[in-house]
Image 1 (spheres, helix red, strand yellow):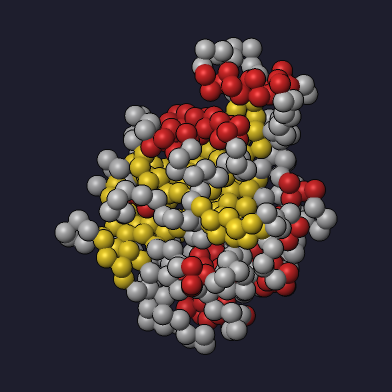
Image 2: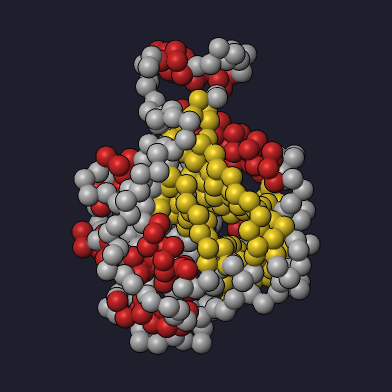
Length: 398
């Protein structure tokens, strides 16, 4: 493919941003690896590396948490707190994870009892193949990246917070997650990238992609949609997964979406992400109807990038950020990922939970651990299995 093939015939030369991008492509001979360009992802997922895990029948949440904690007794997970909304329209911090290594403390959360409330969990869990072979975590012990030293920490982080809906990225062990989360009453779906980089790594467990799980005793499944995101009508290697659910007690339907946009810094990549965001919003608008929307993901974009404004200033969907709305100054968290690579320390905010503000209220969000709690070697580590921190938000339908 030549550079001209990246620019569509109806390219608008009057748009300054697009003109600059076209010049960059033509003058600097930048060749973008956009993916396989196939009409649908290759679902070639053997996912066979967890055959040793077998939970026959049901297991309670407390029993599963105990099991997870016993796998890593020397490496307890970092503690976190919820920031809850009160009647005075301010937020207060409430202690949440008071740990016991050999038991479940009373500080653990329970499922939301309000039928009009939804707890949403968002997390880039770190692809096993990419984390071990491609991501160059300079200060993370090699053993800490081993799948058997990560997988039940991942489960523990998810079920600790009793989410109603779970949105995940970089999933390359979907069958493991589905098997374990099924014991807790969750139903899941998975959509892989068309040309996942995992497939080019020896010993991989299949492609990585996005996944959504939901509690089957709270929701009825209505429908699901998938999208290979496009940039100027050319398929990229990033995807979106959407599900429409109905709350069983109220009959209210909600639209949940998760995505993982193109990575790396730079003006060119920021422009490409913004185009993916435009495609994402168009896809969402065409399927969500008048339902409340929650859109989660690793957007690989800091709040100063164009895509953040593209999403939050969209007049049709009227999306807002849960975490920014919980901050007195209206700011996003200082970081959602904090790692050390060969090129240095990387600490920034690129993960978000967006929602339709005129249809929902934020009741609480899960706060991020402090630098001291994270540790000088940052994440991933023995105490936290991903280079991204999970985001959790409670919403009330209005």
